[in-house]
Length: 353
Image 1 (cartoon, rainbow, N blue to C red):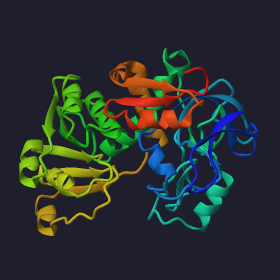
Image 2: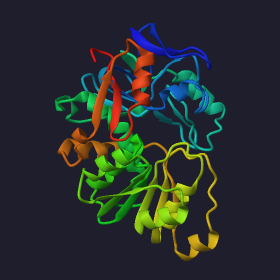
Image 3: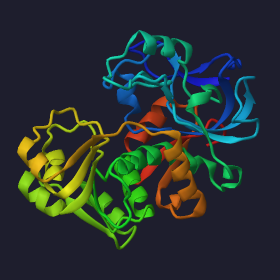
Image 4: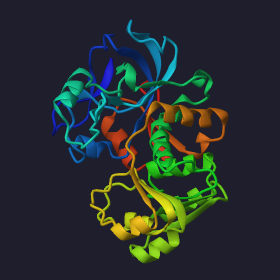
C-alpha cells in the first residue's frame, strides 16, 4: 500500500510503498477515510516539536472504516466507522501519541513509553492502518454522514472540548478563547457555542479570521491582541472561563492577560503550546479563588460527546473550510497545510482527493 513515511530524524516525509499492516492482538485494521493534516506537520518532521520514533508511517489521527478486528477486541466490528485519537494510555502518566510526537505525564518519557512506541509505532497517513484498540472511538451513525472527510476535524474538536470541560459546563457562562484564529482555537469557539456559552470572546491577531469567527453567531465577540497585558485583559474580560489554545508564542503576555480577565472563581485552562513559564500571583489566585487547569488531548467520552453534537446538527461542521489532498505529493500537501489556518483545515484523503 502507499503511505507517508519518515525514516530518520533529519528526513523529509516521503511517499512510500510499504507492506499492508497485519492484524495482531489488541489491534484493529482500518481503511483510512480521511486524516487531519495539522498546519505544523512540517515542523514536527523537522524536529521542532520533539523526536519522532523513526522509522515510521506518520500521522496522529483519522476517521476510518473497520476492516477486521483481533480476537480480543469486543467493542468494534467490521464496517464500523471509527475515530482514531492516536492517544495510547497505559496509566500512571505513561501516554504516547501513536505515529506522532508527544508524551503524556512529564513529557520526558520512560522505559514503558519506549516499549509502547516500539509496539505501536506507525500512524495513519496511509491507505490502511493498524490501530491499537484503545485509541479508537466508534462513531454510531457516521456511515450516513454526507462528507466523511469533514469528520477528520473531530480530534481537534475533542481536544478543545476536553479543555472546556476542565472548567465545568460552558452553558450560560462567558468564555474566552485565546488563540482563536488558529485551528485548535477555532475548534474551541465552535464547541463553546455548541455547548451553550452565553458569550464567546475570540482572541487573536488575524483580523480577517476574527471577522469570520464573529460572523458565526451573535454571541461571538472579538478582541485583537495588542501586546499590552492590561489593555488585552480589559478587552478580553471579564469572563468566567478562558481557554488558552496558543501555539509556541514568544511570550506569555497573552496567556497572563487571559488570567487577568477572569472573574472571581473563574478558570484558566491551558490547552495550547506556549513554551513559557507563567508568573502566577499567589495571593491573587488564592483570594479570587481562581482555578488554573491543564488539559492534554481528549478521552473517549469527550469524543463521543462531540460526535453527538455534530450528529445532531448542534455543531455544524459546514462552518469549517475543508481542503482535501491526496498522498501523491507530500511536499505540496504540507505546504497547503501550513497556509491553512483559522476555521479551515486540510484532510488527507488516501483515495481520490
